Image 1: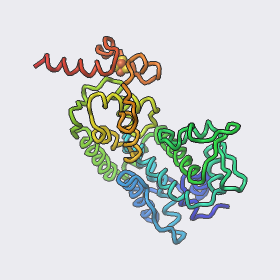
Image 2: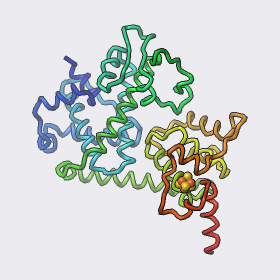
Image 3: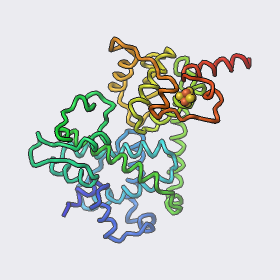
Length: 344
Ligand code: SF4
């Protein structure tokens, strides 16, 4: 039997969901009963914290009542997140919950993490020795942030299909699995009218904040770059990065080398990446400088359309006439500039 304080700290667990179910609480009670007012305000707090601080936030869990309110605030926050109806917000909320869980998980015993990994169907081997935690490579590749050097397979030992990881690595892998799960769950749900009615002023307030945030990103001048003239492939990659989606390495590589060819400096490229919910400045800067040849002897050139297609990162926008004529994303961008000049 899991303790109530644990259930409330890890409200995403099946046992936590079952606790709420077994207590027979209806959505109406959650929304209207004055007894659950604190759960409702905490739900809003989770969303604000996740968006503003990239962490759903810690609250006191000293009493039974604290724990129950915390536990109930999680489904409330999720239902409101769905009603905000904004992909970027949902991604950022999911990340905030997952980061929050990670910060707690690193302080738990490995056996606890091992139990949680089963809930996410991760094939993890652990027999009591923290120095011998292993994960099946497929689960590793699916969840590890392999865009970072130390997580790349080449830097990890593979033995009989399993990769050795640390306690902290396992917590980070669970963070990613949780983030993906929340994203999928939020995307599969539609807004409940009763939720919208109860929280309409907060929903509108948050929508407004997200809108201002987006406008600030779009209006920020990035050197000489005109985002509206980017080819569909680069627009798609950039939008996915900014929405916190898991963009494959080749997509990041294509975008950075493309921007580098347009003579954007590292800070300008970094600025474009900085609105991603999972942005980490130091690591992103390292990647950019590596691709741009500032920390290595090679400056990589951006792939052409054929290569982009091979890697599955060309959206092949048939409605876009320029794409039909051009063989390289850079020629597309330059042609857009010429078109504008000719109009003047
Ligand atoms: S055809 Fe070329 S420029 Fe157009 S979207 Fe595909 S890769 Fe990009």
